[in-house]
Image (cartoon, rainbow, N blue to C red):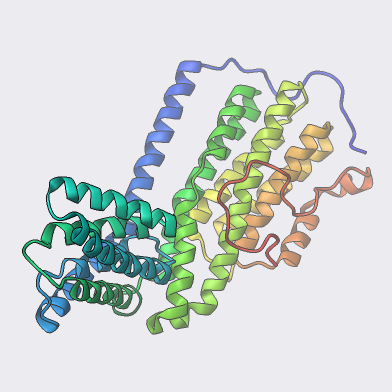
Length: 417
């Protein structure tokens, strides 16, 4: 049982300035948004170059080599292959080429039935899209069917026998798009994961700072705001980067040598995503403890501060094969020690849960840098004060996230080894 100290809750009940807090939140949000946009721009730079090269190459092959007149579909499909559904390019390309084929066939058939004209164009496009929806709800397929049918309806009066050349254009565009994206100019899988993960880790660290401030000032509303922000954190960029990295390493000969290191990065990404879930539990448990007027000693606030520092350093130092203790590892070890010390100060169940949350996130942070689960758990036990064991106090729970609001976290095993 945990020794419970009765009396006034630990820490002063500070007066909170709502205007200052709101202004600080605006500044943090604005700064994070600007960083996110810059990172997305950097991630899109290679995609933009790939799209330009693929469009030019597809047009040249279809127009100059195959002598197809006005090969509009070739660059369109090439760009669509590269710019959308990164990580699922083969599936995307199949839908695009199938959409071209179905759209051309429907366009030719409907033009022969209803003729040409502005009203007929509208009817042809609407009918083609409805038919495509019946076949498949895939957005790229439906869009390509409608666009292909429209082109046929518009060009049919001046050109005949468009079906075969346009279908060939679609195949050329898909093949060129795949070659450019995965062979000629493949993305660097590790760089993409690191760049996509950095803003996510920065956001987690920023909200952990707010959780520490809420614990120190006994501000339940601030803890609730941090929880709401953590629940809204978007992990789609990192999910996409992981999918794209797996695809490139599997297919591109230029990136086959990255296979082993990619597994380490996927393992680290899965652990940091779990840390996001556990951070939500941390904020939720703090809000509950404060509203229940439980003691939250300053040492717990210090532990969350150290945890935020550890996650913030991970955003810069992130590597699954660190050979020596990094700043993030040292800060995480400090957080574990401070959380364990807080357990000796007399806590109720809410405070114990907070200490457990801090320890779990810190261990995940250490493991993300290449430390094995066994070694990280041993380190956590070694950092526990002897007094905690002597007094029979509760140790941190096993390294499993508590139930909490889940986001689109789809990569990595449920319990990475």
